[in-house]
Each structure stands twice: as structure tokens, then as C-alpha cells.
Length: 347
Ligand SMILES: O=C(O)CCC(=O)C(=O)O
Image 1: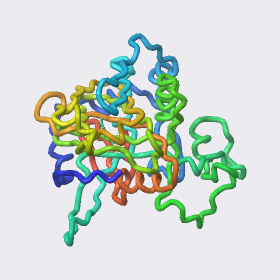
Image 2 (image 1 turned 45 degrees about the vertical axis):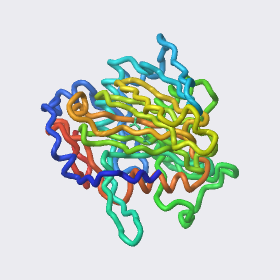
Image 3 (image 1 turned 60 degrees about the horizontal axis):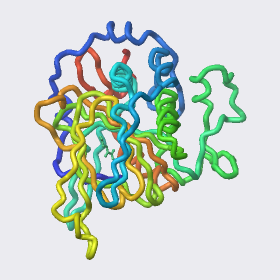
Image 4 (image 1 turned 30 degrees about the vertical axis):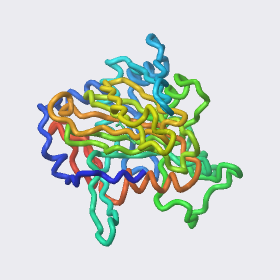
């Protein structure tokens, strides 16, 4: 979705952050020793596979605390996993994804009356996936031996999901080339799908990185038609704790009773928590992660949402607002910040 951000924010935001120096490259390498990478022509960089220390835990998640259903407000249907991932796994996954994913600081313009306003998204973003009308399938003509995860990803091509006929290069359905969900996020997708057990199959992963407490997302709802009606959205938090606010949309007519004057709900989402927004939540509620002074904002926070887009409009929207047309940013461990990188950064 295009979130029209309330505050114009610049890339200096990312450079301004001054967390204490985290760890050196060497210590990071030692923690996550050399591994395999997923390659794909539509990826800007190869994307590292999860080290076995993380993937084994993810594949064998056992639930100690049952999720809490929150349905005590009009049209609200939340499932709150507190936590979804144990804290050490959440910490390792946070450090891994921040270091290994390509991020963007997307710029776009909006028209307000006669004036064009330029917006810089006040957080880093990235996205993978394709809507229901297409599917990634192994290229039948691929010469690459299909032995490892890495080569399996590199031979994926887009096809029509009904006929499984490959989309020709000339196809104009997508404005940007969709990227298959890399194995490191696909394992998480599967863990989410089996934990929620509601039959939802997600085809998109959107990742936000809030570098400091100055990064945010304004009130919005993910109520676009391209998600179908009453979409489920599963949202995982990693890293610094940040408040997640929900408020009801302005009531209409007879609906006002019990809604007017209702205070926003506040969930201080911690590393490893998962909030699943279900049913009528998107069509009736707005959510946000406001800027935050002090607290854990300085630690950085990753948010991962799993969604299911049903038509190509969803794919075009997600790549436009989460990849855009600028260069990539990569986490630089020894500087403790994201840096603009035209070429892959050695880690
Ligand atoms: O960071 C979060 O918890 C919320 C993210 C969100 O609302 C979105 O990506 O639409």
C-alpha cells in the first residue's frame, strides 16, 4: 500500500543513527559461518540461506504459550503470539536478516491538489513474492543441476498459475520483476502457516527495518482490494521493542455506539512476538508504529508481514512502494548502520 507518511523524512535519518558499535565483521562471521546463498536473476544480490542453528529451530518450533485471541472490540479480530519465537532465536534471526537482506529507502511523489509532494518512506523496506495469478516454477529448460537450495531458487521462472505456462519476457502484467521468496524467509512463512493453522497460504513477505526511533509507519489499514475481503496478515517483530497502535476507523451512522471515544489500543511488541490481524480488522481498524524517543528504538527493529495478494495490482503496488527505483542499502556490521550500496558489500 502507499502509506502517505505524515512527516517528510530524508536519508540522513539512516546515517544519523548512532547505536553503540554492535559487533565486528569477524565476530558476525564466526556466529554465522560461511553458508550457501540463494541466487535469482531478479535478486539484486545473492541471499544467504539460514545457518542450521536457525533453520533447525524454526523447522521444529514448539508452542509453549498458546496465542491469545483478542476479539473484545467491535470488528477486531487479532491473534497475539507473545511470543511466537523464543528470544534467542528471534535475536539471531534479527541479526541475520538485517545483515543479509537488500533494503530500500523508497522515494515517491504524491499529488495533493495542484502540488506534488515528494516523500521518503521513513523506514527501510524490502519485499518478495507474487500474487495468486502467477507462480514460480522450476525452469524446464534449466541446465543447472537441481541439487541445493541455492540452485533450486536460481532456476525458478514465473508462470501462469492456472496453466503453468511460463510468462513470456514481453509480458506487461508486472511493472517490476517479481522476486521469489528466498529460502531464509520461506521457512519462516511455513512456520507461520502451520502455527496459525487457519489454512491461509501467504504469497508475499514484506520486511520493514526501523533503524531508530525516528523511523515509523503512520496510521493506515491494509484494506486494498488486491488482498481480497477480510485478509489475514501475520506480522512478526524482531529486535527493539516498539509500540503497535490500533484505532477504529471513524464510525458511520448507527455504528457510532461504543466506537466513538474509544482509546487507541497499544501493544508494546517485543522481539519474537507475532500479531495476526484477521477477519474484519483491516476494513474497520487503522494501525501504526509511531516514532519513539528513547527506549529500545535505538536498537533497530525488523517487522515481517506475510500476506496473500490475489491479483497483479497487489504485486505492482508492493514492489513500487517497498523496492521502488533506487539503489539498495545493506547493513554494515562494523559501522552499525545501513549504507547505500550499488554493489554487494563483502560481509
Ligand atoms: O511494523 C509493524 O509492526 C507494522 C507494519 C505495517 O503496518 C505494515 O507493513 O503495513
